[in-house]
Length: 298
Image 1 (cartoon, rainbow, N blue to C red):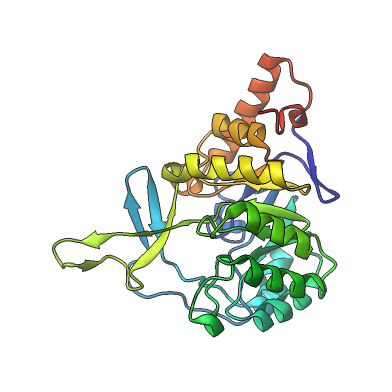
Image 2: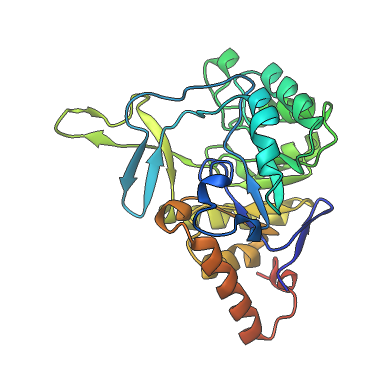
């Protein structure tokens, strides 16, 4: 009833834990059997270990939250040797989310991950490109196309590319990534945002800007997923402010093959359990035997 297939891989349901909101899975194991998920996207990985940003990292805002964690992670090698064996014990698909500061970082990281038993690679192109003044790889189509093309050459794993809503043109960006070899697309990543401490008279975050997520971005994410899914011939995975089963259904109807749950995991650690139950109830009430029947019907 809830089974979906993305790039030849079966997912028991269309729910994937979004990168950066679910750790490496075991962090939520005390709440429920995380193996009920269709998949888990790992905490964002970089070639080398990162301590992340200093100062305030998470800040609540109206209908959402902002984060400036800075991709704190153990590095690709430590992930492969220390973390992945534990993740593989979870009965679900494991997706490695990979970022980088240079194209070389992406290439080397992807080639290392290619030799493991992960199920997919999710390429985070929202990372700042240190060789181009800090502009994210996912802003300009030609830059994104180059990094996706280079990574495509070093891995045979299904390649999901995570798009930034800050791209100059989200549809052109999607088409460029598909042309460069992306097998699927996930969108949206966080929206560039800002908060000010009026008493200290300075930005809340050390880096001034942060990533906005949560219900506040859902209408934007839904629109972008709809536009992109109509433009490309590869699977689209939707995320951005999904809080309940109704939100999931909206994204599927807009064209998403699956969705990722992010900020809601902080609000309700049991969200996935509730959503799976409510999705099954919706399908039964509507007389729908296969959830794929509603994908892209809008």
